[in-house]
Image (cartoon, rainbow, N blue to C red; front, side):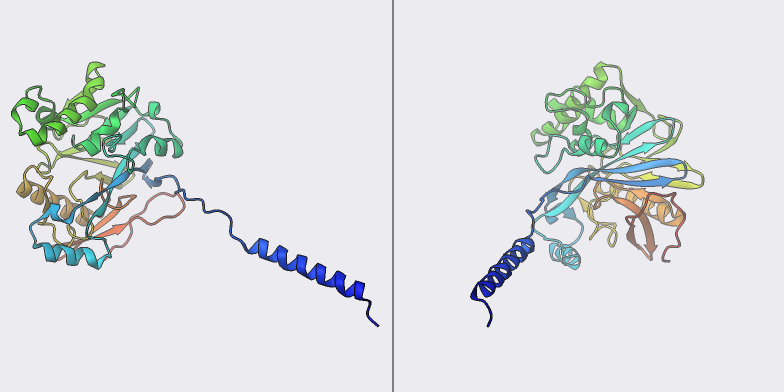
Length: 330
């Protein structure tokens, strides 16, 4: 006859096992953090690191040149929430072996809690802000210059010389500009002037004529339209090239398919459209790498031309290795 004590012991043991199993089945607490925002690519002997500064939500109504319903339809094809299209702020670090060069500085403290992550991502990528010796500004809109200074208007990059095309600097940094531009535009001019002021005071802000090279490794070109002095920067090494295009595009869903669509931020929409078409056509023909400030992070990839339309082929995540020419769709 089975002992009642033995049955009781087995019941208790089974209960303990079931309780232990239930405890093990409970998931740990959610982490609710994101990975650091950097992405590395080798272009010849140059190391290019895309850096995520943050994002902002832009209204679809800012896009001009198509009926609103048509724009919403293009956004819907990519399942983009049309009340506010998330738009990234990307900056790029280029280590040439001779210079550590930052292209644009993000929105810094000027946007709010969804931006201002550049310096922490520089550090996460293995660098320090004071190691950067050169900063190239594609233009002087706030989401490209605010990261130059901290909340106290002190320089973030203690050892960097900042460069901008002369037409761009002349437009934004003219001391008389704030008094002569429309009231709604004055804040943007003040931000550009405040962000560059400590570098100017220290003799570390310089301008260059379009086509000149601020540092030997870079080639520049004026692509006016978005702003009067919007500039692209091209780096080439060992047969590989990457072109930093700034704000030639804002909307992945709309402006590749329809490059004649402009955005309300353009100073001269027709010039901006012409610059976009020219640069996209050249980049597609040469099959070079392209890096854009407002495409989804890391904002790095290739452009493919199909008839009078374009497609974006983003870089894919993988082990860090030397970039190679990749057969692209024709």
